[in-house]
Length: 178
Image (cartoon, rainbow, N blue to C red):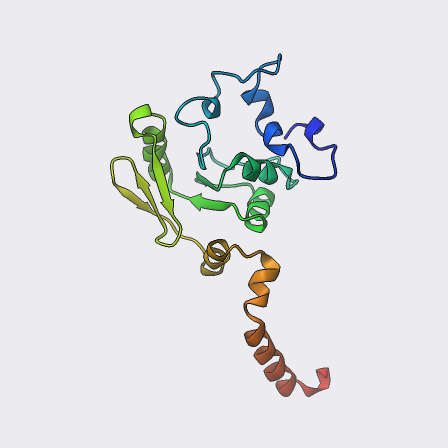
């Protein structure tokens, strides 16, 4: 996210800043050579990305821009640590695949005839245009939060009874903490 998009105090317009120097020409027109400006990839909900995607992106602005652009999931072999955490906090699904799986997926989505994929979070599968599926793993709590649209606070509130039970048992076992 270029610095000129980090001046505001709100999140508006961050979709324009996302991949700005790649998506737009110096005169401000869309770059016809950039993949997300081309049919059928314009308006994509999922991005197939390279290794360590998000490296150098320590602010949430990049994730906010992804969400504003309509990106719901990123599929790659690895993600930068801070970027990974920011995606988790902001409801963007990160799918980690092996290099071989990502290569197959990348080959299919780069072809106009086979570019379409679907992601089923509940079933934890990516279905390719040739109808084959790739399974992926996701932490159960993370999956639940994404499916229910919960942030960290909402996820915690889902477990209020379990937290109270733990607190009661903990205080009973350690009365000096009361």
